[in-house]
Image (tube, helix red, strand yellow):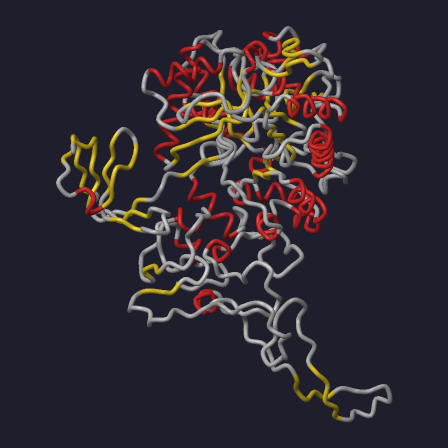
Length: 620
């Protein structure tokens, strides 16, 4: 048999319970044709010796602005790494402007006022760019700073007459003129001049973003927003740009694209008594193939947390009187959700603030009750600030939250400042969602933060900001608050439904050793009511929620884990309910059906960052 390629002398992790590892893989027509001895007698067009390297299944990023990643790579970089101060940002603008024609735009993205101290102003950009139009997008992509010339190109000479916009905010100076910063929907005042970009430019952005994704180990990506100029995307022909990139061999990843909600419209009657809401020709979620397909429709309900524009139930900690804003009214969000759900769309709604989340949950709940539809699998993008009741309601409604682990390190310090120490415990509660039985997809929201999946997994486990501060401990046993510990993926938790005192498997006790605790009962000297200082014996009060050595366990109602009938071979650890030992990030970061009860090498060098293994409670 003649194959397209054979990769041999590698350590492949298959995530197949019947055959978890392999040394060689054969590929035919883009599919795995065989493993190891199944390839005996086969030839191949391409043979690759991996030199003993580890290989894992490709990663998926469920929320990754691939076209914007590529656009950022081709424009001015004003991230904190490239411009660590406001003066450095102005200097970078001046250097770029000096290389451009006098009437050319200076376009850039990535600055964070939480790190450089303040937002750029129009006056500062005017001085740096020598009168050229400047448009610098914030790292959240929920606000941007414009120069005076940029406002003039948009029809607002001298930054005067800039209107207030529903769902947005225009920052003004003492004279009432626009100061330069435009938030949320107010960004469209200037972006209308810049979009849509020429088709070839957008195709080049897609190609650059796809190349960066493949280099990070991503093989499939969901682009959350295409198809409009007044929302997310470049223009009404965005899908055509992706098709052209695919036809030219530039789209190296499998793509799912989300049309923005304002691209959907009333298309007229499609059967007696019912009208079609969506895209023309009846296109909706699921159209396409494995390389390029239409996914959910995307909607923004509020703004960003570090920009203080996400809709919150309480004032921001550092800006009293500000609770953020909704980008659409409550009634408009309800109408969008009900109509899209009725016509078969999966819906992915951006909701960061807890107030916005309540609005979205109410709309999803009403839509399912009005038009019952099994397997709707509606999503909540980010779900950044959630109460216990909201976590429980998300699980009860069968929704899919899509948080971003990398936000905790790259944006976490600004997040803590915005929320304050008490409310920060409600931020990005990955562990709480897992405890509620919710399956979390991995995502980055690149280019807001780095798109490398290993970095995201690292931050979900370690849960530290760039300054090293953990979010305040959430309620419960986990620490730091909300951290998704690796043993949740390694099968080291109690079996589902087991009582609190049920022992973890033996290998879990090796991986996670609780702190020593005092005996359940000891003699202590204390003064009684008469304060005579008599010695009395009283039981030591155990910590809430922690099983104590020596305490009588309740009657066993759950079967104990079975021991292997045969001795464990040297170098292997017996997995009771999941894989243990080393292995790839894919083993630890993704749940795989049928992965229980396998034997795994215990001394294999893991492919993920060492700091992830050394997180609290773990030992190499």
